[in-house]
Image 1 (cartoon, rainbow, N blue to C red):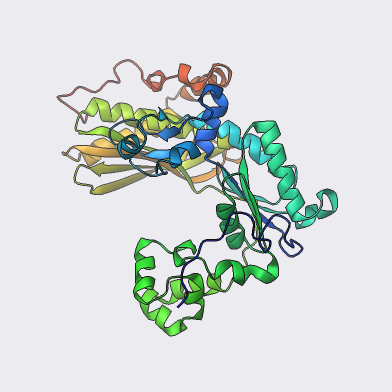
Image 2 (spheres, rainbow, N blue to C red):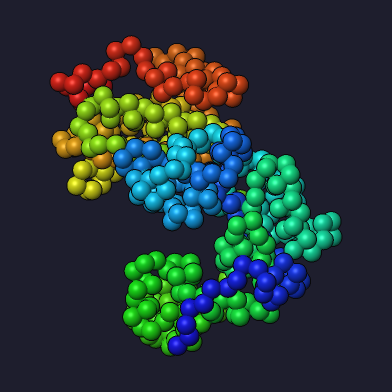
Length: 419
């Protein structure tokens, strides 16, 4: 069996920026340490210092770490307390979602000025199919260089790009180009690129399946590619075995799909300490509902189903949902439903985490809304539109979640189920 190797980020002419890109029209562009980089752009005095973005409370989790912080071992998804132990001198900042969303929109606009075939995966990464852009902008590697240059010059941010024949290989390429690099995988060298990599690099291989494969003596993608299919099927099941076998041989027929339709929009928060305080929980649901409402309106979406997630102190998780009479993007309507779901649930135990989500999304422009009996023609929808306008001008921080609270909305501790 082969032994896992890591490919050099640069210096290997087989996969360098000047390699043959004639059969590699797919780009994967991945922003470098995106949240942290946006914060450094906002506060230039932090440049060169370790910066960590994430929850700052005792149960916070790292969302992004600058490369200066990564040198100390700080990584995304690491508990913030662990990050502080590794790098106590770093600057720790809470996430600013509106700032990252604005930066993402600007970057995605650059991508779409190159090709309409852009498939965003998240705020900070996207696939591009540039086959149709060659005539205007040149070969794929040259297009990748142009994108990197424009992102740096226009947005003050860096990105890494993988150029390959397929989405899967392009994403692996960008990972190995980081930070601030470009890697081209020629169509006739895909297996040379893939097979030395560890099996954990395959999409769909988590810690458990990687351990299963290692027990079978399969440590590299090449090992898996050469393994008897029957053995894979017995160990992983039919679907996973087929999926991983195809990827191991570089076969990924999926096209770049620019029509990315969100199925739901949600937000959640972990309390610094487990709580059964109805006021604290209510305010958390209120803040989450406001976030969801803002994201719905920004996306031009409305939804018919509101769901909540409640994680108890013993890590048991309970979900509840309710379908509304009509679609909504109004935070107050989301909150009223979320609070009703929570009070009906009445967990009776301390709570670790709560989340709010709106599902069953559709375009707001094509979703007529009917007033309910006794509802004024102008109300929460208009108030939230005004809040959106104020936030766009002065920043979201000037519009707090308490703006959604009316008089008498604060729950009494002795009767936490009172609406």
